[in-house]
Length: 197
Image 1 (spheres, rainbow, N blue to C red):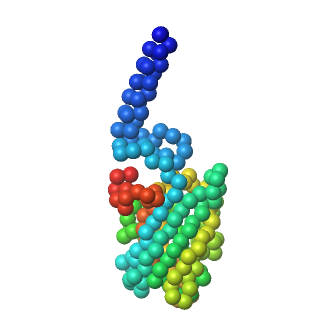
Image 2 (tube, helix red, strand yellow):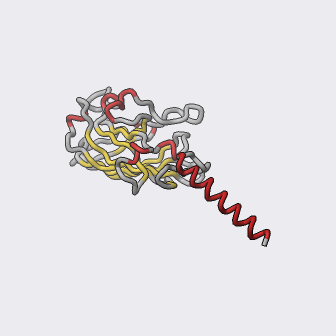
Image 3 (cartoon, rainbow, N blue to C red):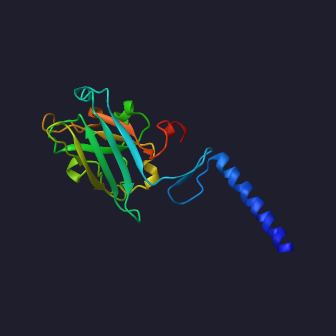
């Protein structure tokens, strides 16, 4: 009887702790989970729905759209980045794709590349493999592997930027010349997820 009573008390205390943690939105795990006031989310893949930017470079591709999906190899390995780009640069084999800090695409020019400089040099450069390829209709689909030394959850709500070829403009890969941009949200979540994160 005493053991059953103690178990009931422990269960009630655990429930109170869980509710308090969820209400206060504290991170309760070491993994890729985040407690919020709405629910407990496990982040296994992030997706950005790309749109043209309002930059001078972006105005060349007003109908650019598509998506970029980010996952991680097991044991904190490379990021696996799948992409589908539509109405982008034509026959581009050196177009840059990068992930940046920041919360608004309008401020991507002041954002920083997302990587740990103690672990790796900046991997978000086309010559380091962070590039996408398109065909003669401006469509591209494929994947790249990138290691940036950051925890997977740290990519949530960060910016994905797309850039044009350097063949036409040597400055095409500068942040201020992004042609497409979007925020990474956990797959399956609403587009306004990052406003509450």
